[in-house]
Image (cartoon, rainbow, N blue to C red):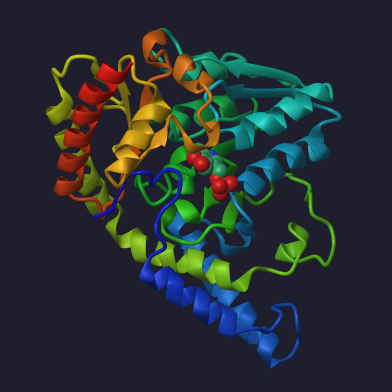
Length: 377
Ligand code: PLP
């Protein structure tokens, strides 16, 4: 039986989300149409917006639907630069962001913005002070992720954004919450970010839908211009079916965030206990990491080789992260994972549907792989 342990890459679409896609497809009217068919579609959008807003504890009008978290983050980064980039030129971020944040910031740097990228300290941790101390009157944007997608490391975003706002209240605080939303219990005000990027397919909704929270009063100019949908912030006819599906998944998951957290944490503990003391194996995700993402290194065995060995046993994991496509991860290096492991790290990422049996099967396949692949080398 297939064992899927790659939930940080994407998740299996749940039945509720599938049904909601169908419901959204049946309501085929254009939500901008004035007639009754349009009103039905608009109603679906309004309800979905309410669900997302409720889950973050924000106003409905502060939620904008997008095609993915990559679009959400690009919108904030380029949109903030467009709105205020003439007066303020400094952007602060970390060296462990997802490419959907790192790449648009690189682009702005090429356009002349000053970019400061903060590295984790010698323990692989970002201290709030290392970011806050850089904020000045010229600071336009601070973008820091909540949970790192390669190791599950939970960044101290609450302390960071609080300090940033104290140093310069005009600085836009953006948080990529893709790996924390519906996994850790939080509301927008808990982390104090002005803008939050979310993705549907990481939480059992389909690929191709995301959302962006923008706090009222924060100036972000739109990237997509056209028919004025999403209150003029993101033109283009809304993807009613996928938005409905995203909301259905959130509705399903929201009441069980803590319960699922506990389930996944006990699976992580089981995995760590089974691998502890095994020679040549290290678990890189400690107690300050989200239990949903576990980074495991097997000395001298290349990530991709182990990934395919596990695949031959019908067990699916990632090498580092899905986005790094087998490349040596600079993020793992930044997180101070020892050099000898950088090429030999796999990512196990869980959901609450995983079982103890999945963990046991993974551990025995990993050990089998370690023994047999070491012989081939
Ligand atoms: N941010 C993080 C932390 C991620 O893990 C991912 C996906 O891997 C993304 C952003 C991009 O999300 P999307 O696929 O919705 O663009």
